[in-house]
Length: 108
Image (cartoon, rainbow, N blue to C red):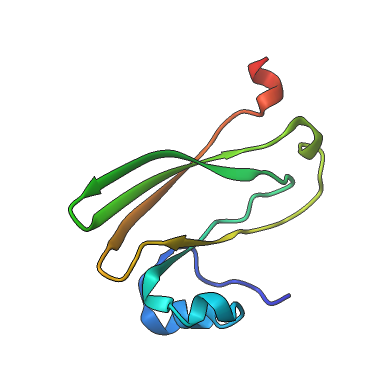
């Protein structure tokens, strides 16, 4: 697995195409997708959930919440996520904000 050097929302068309290249179904409609690369998550696994979305005409802002399941807390993994967000051709994803929350175990 190659190292990912970009972090955040990818606005450069060449870099975006590079990440979409490994997914032929997405790369055929590359203009319909935005690419976001997370920071390293440290020693844990988890997943993203949509926390908030703001739409102003064709401009979109997303807020994503990163949560860990109780069974994932002890995982020793240094990982990053590549998120492919379908936005359609005439829409522009302006920003992606990520929030790290406490594990679901601590919420009970």
